Amino acid sequence: MKRGFSAARSLRRPGSKSYATGKDIQFGVEARKRMLDGVERLATAVAVTLGPRGRNVIIEQSYGAPKITKDGVTVAKSIEFAEPFENLGAQLVRQVANKTNDTAGDGTTTATVLAHAIFSEGFKCVVQGTSPVEIKRGIDLAVKEMVKGIEELSRDVAEKDEIKQVATISANGDTDIGSLISEAMAKVGRNGVIDTADGRTLETEVEIVEGLSFDRGYISPYFATNNKTQKAEFENPAILLCTKKISNLQSLLPFLNTVAQQNQSLVIIADDVDGDALMGLVLNKLHGKLKVAAVKAPGFGDNKMNIIRDIGVFTGAQELNDEAGAGIDNVTNPLQYLGRATKVTISKDQTIIINNEAPREAVEERMEMIKSQIAATDSSYEREKFQERLGKLGGGVAIIRVGGASDVEVGEKKDRVVDALNATRAAIAEGIVPGGGVALLYASKRLPALLEDPALTDDMKIGVKIVREAVRKPCTMISKNAGVNGDVTIHKLVEYNDNSMGYNAAEDSFVDMFQAGIVDPTKVCKTALQDAASVAGMLLTAEVAITDIPTPPAAGGGDAGGMGGMGGMGGMGF
Image (cartoon, rainbow, N blue to C red; front, side, top):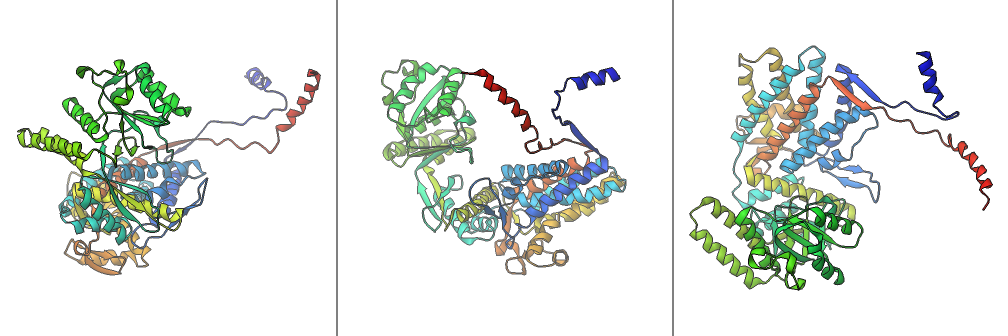
């Protein structure tokens, strides 16, 4: 053994330094305790933004001015701790905020507060000897009952004023943003496309442009032109449509040379782009030789062909179609097939084409043809697809131009506009519930009946009780941010028999939340609870946590002395 050890040592260079690297492992209570510390610090930072009287958070950025925001997910994304185990817990809860944001578009602060409340209460019980697995089962059963309770409280969004109310609440009580979103939806329809952009003035305004959108994004993320938003944005691009898969770069060269000569960008919408063609486009884009992006055409079968032709009518492009004798491999005049657009914005899952010079007569003729097809069909599926195409072709795009006195102000307001838009879409999809955290409080009235179920073990009942207490936290936090005792607020609300009553933190009064317009989207409320309970349950049942051992920084200039040997280079005598 000694010989082996000395052999290992002999492999080191004399005078060199080495650091141990490996994994740090924590078990049981200690692992959960250290992760809880990170969760608690993250949740405390995020929770201050909750409610109409929530506070701002100032975030240092690696470039530019600090960011000021009241958006929970933005705060969560910016947090990373130096202590590895704290960071482990924080990143798991941050993932909840991201997932809730992706699914429902809002409710990230509520999800973070709930995850912390469930995990911290569960941790106390586990330390006292309660089974974490049984607690998680109880939590899961309680969440199922809570979701049923939330759905019972839900109402459909029917009026324009209700849309305004949802948007206003999500924008932290900003009635101007609520009015703008309501106005935009009235103009482009509930299924229309609403986008945001930086304004040119101090005022925030709505601009309606002729636009067409579909739910397909770029084929490769390397096509993105804006690394921050991960979107590909093109001004005045040429549009190429193809009904077949494009695999050979040679077949695209006539079009690429044409747009390159005219110093234009190119958007390719095809059945698919792969192989040499995709590789060639990506490499040329990365090297700055071409401004290009490829998008897979939306839909399937005949519906895909029809959508490609809709895009052709809208942009003036003629699709390349082998069946019509116009295959991509035998093109002699590329300009004949290329269409035009004013602006194209492509994300990972959506493409928006804006064309201020769309041939209006051709578009209206196409819409009339689709209307006649709707009237003629007996298939509900076909009718739905026709109506979807009609809405996209004729709906247009509403752009909310966010104004402000500085870039920092515009950025903060833009975060709230995006939140409000997402919340409004969620409300239209699944309805609304009373806001201010009271929907969770009233839905928990179903839990006492669950506690009477004889099939539940004592440890599972503890899980149910943890959820019952945790769902009070959002309402408590909204009251605290308004300078009011949260426990007193909860006590008063529990005394009401009306499930519509709640605390209006903006005016410090108890009101009918539906009448006052203080509402939350049902989808946001359910998603926040489900995601929070899921990650809290995972944290509770974790018995081992493993992190990398950080490598200590090298001592300042410690190894630089070795460079002295460079003096020997004098012997190279040129």
